[in-house]
Length: 402
Image (cartoon, rainbow, N blue to C red):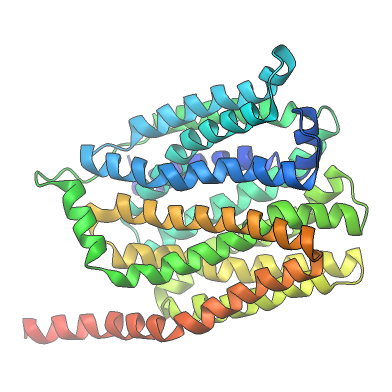
């Protein structure tokens, strides 16, 4: 099978996972009410947080197991099937059985533990491919952006039919994930030495990985912020319906999707530092700008700007993980990146929800955008150092050959 076809299939897996996930966001307050919750902000916060807490707990587990066994595909298939069953259970249980909202949150966490296997390991398989790290991560980025761009407006429309319909559609989509994964060749490294031990050792010896991990954390913090606080803000401040809220979220995700691949290829040419550092700085300012927007039209324009800037920095950040990770440590390295990202998403939900509830929406936007800007400033020296090392490496290699 050609590299291009495998890249397309794996990007398809990532796309479908994100599509299923984001279907729930535009009307999450409506959904939690249907599942037995008695509040909107708090219940929505914990419903989203339960999934991402499981992402944090299990991303590293799946990555380590896949590196240790030299297999990726079986775990993606298993994650897809289990995720499908658990998405359906979320919709069915509160109707068929008198269960507490706490039980709903437990099922949600189990669904997250299954789903992260499909997402994290499909990303790792993209890293396993040849063809340029920026190109492969650009494909991942456009899949993520496309899934979320389509999921937001589609989910909004589904909520207009039934508050639990997005769950059933998500269940069907996870079965598609399992099917797509069976069509991909398993290219996990198969050397004979202790893969897990070598991967963990490599991570310990590569402290520079903390830089893309930090950006992954902050970038996903803002994503978690928009998934909860942004959604409820748009519905409260501008009185938008779930369908209209989905369209507002799509204004971010559409440019984010369309520009990921070309910006990923660009980062292969110009390096990672400029897209990450400059992109993150502008991104933080743009997030604050959305919170300051006086009208729905200006807020919509701000979401487009956030999407464009996000597309500049996201594939470069993921490609930097691949630049720094050795072949046998890719599964663990990408799992670590996804774990930090999931912690960030979780922090965006919890911190954003707390600040919005205690102080107000504008303060929450300032905290989210300010965190992104601060990360760019603090990490800039490390990024410059990595870029200088990357540029000098070919020169050193050529000199030794002469």
